[in-house]
Image (cartoon, rainbow, N blue to C red):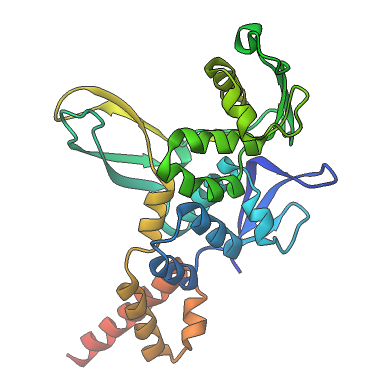
Length: 298
């Protein structure tokens, strides 16, 4: 079996404090493609968990990898694993379209980059907990202590935050901070009311420290819009692009399964367990052989 081996930019820290970073994935098969085409309406973080849960076979010394551990992987680690799956399925080149962010333009802008060129920033300290001191200005006259202990957001946070984010960005931020902050002065854990009581400066300092501590998959598209000429820098929706690409055409998948089953007499299960690359290699070989037979007849 083909394996995709990689090292996570962050890593999963188990209950014993051991860091697991070496990952092994199986390439996407027809089964994952079918799953994605059938679950397009599912919340994005849940799709990430489901797809990685199907493909992640080993994480450090952990094998098999339970879905709960997949869910507890750091956000950047989950993005990185998706990127490796996409690379194995479609190669390095990414070609897509974004919209100019300027309200008076919104013109489509073509983008083209290589996955090999995507900056991956490893976390210097693997946690799982981080401690910081709020500035005196951030605390002010509040009775809240200055010391803050937090963990980094993971997939379980994303899954729970999605419905809240649809209603209110501020409520989602408060909920995320309440989940990630373990200690706020003498409050352990602080809860959402304590987070809301923080000054805007305190919240900003905490968010900045969390950002600085976290590993990153840097996907900021920058350039000049060819239509309006204005410079822009906007994040690229990696997960949305990958899921659209991976589950783009269920009819084509079924036609490929039918084509191989008809000529090779393989079962649907055998064909659907193949990676897209292997499936299409067989199709190319078969098409070439059929063409040779046709040429010989004529």
